[in-house]
Image (cartoon, rainbow, N blue to C red; front, top):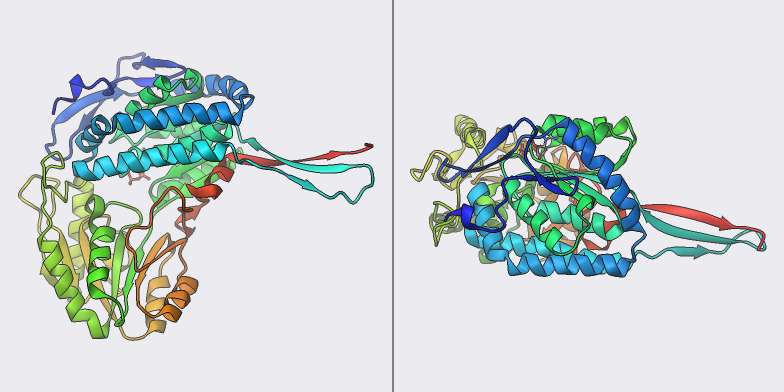
Length: 483
Ligand code: ADP
């Protein structure tokens, strides 16, 4: 595919209402992880452009918050329509820079669009309260107002959805947005920006700044005019940005790493569990924060489950995501491949059993064989650290108590999955799992209508659902006295 012919393929950033290059002409090349070929370049911007964007966003936000929720919703709905109409082109851009199979990329575009239509609706439902006042002749009114200018810093694994999940509620609430996309995947972000302008979004209200992550991040977080940070990415960077946000006491949402357990009890429907396992483990080549990291399987079905999972893994087709039929694309970079290799080597050194895979794949430098490891133990790296790759590690347990203890034995608390046909056990597990999200007999839990987010060191705040817009609002209480 030749991206250069796509109208949405933009090799400029969008700052202060204009498509722009760097003043010094500096650019950054973007690589297709499947072919390692350069697909284009984007401007390498930094502190000054970010400061300019904040200044413009502040002015634009004040006008935007005075518009009616209905008119904001109309622009968001137009943006939604345009995203859906352009899903094929967007998916191809996404696959070229990120690597996931085209069908998954298309699925992500539809998922990304769903946040835009959802929050277009939610814009109209930002309700307040009237509280009976303890003072006669007075009224207590509670209203909600936009936080102001929002900084959105996003990762490469969902180059479209992680942007709309932040920007749509922010715009719906009446905020302005400055987006710093991941350096690996700027083109999807820029294409979405293009469509937002076509939808009629005031141009200074949103910027997409490519370039020096640290300089852009510093400028955003130092600014007294940015009142909110919404970040999705790794836990160490999230903690750093949380610290930086403390200086100006920003409102913060963080969606960080996980270490998801997938628990299969003896009484589970094994076929259903294996289908859920495939979706929850191998989507995006294992590179999602809700991907399973640890399969905890009860003794009675352990061998059956390992065998059934092995068979399904053998059906996966590794290759360039742009090729029809591919189900596993490349990993994002060499560091990701090295991490996968080190987790496998460590597990095997600690006497895990390699069932299938375990090697780099011949399709190219960043491809890795879908891998299954049995007899994993809590002292292995795969138990403690998010692999973020196509490696399924299976642990054995005896009792429900043991499963709960193993599942919760991590500093992370994003997603957990549990397969059982016992209704009482399903409820007990939902209660006992220390996670922000639990899938019972279900491996795909993400939807725009439900609150996505973690507890413990997996993050703060929730995205999507009726709760998601609150992250971009602040509560105001007004006492009307002497009435
Ligand atoms: P990953 O390891 O998955 O790439 P990161 O947490 O490093 O995840 O990156 C997520 C996002 O955070 C990206 O947009 C990246 O550029 C950005 N980022 C990384 N370090 C910093 C930083 N020091 N300041 C601001 N943004 C950063």
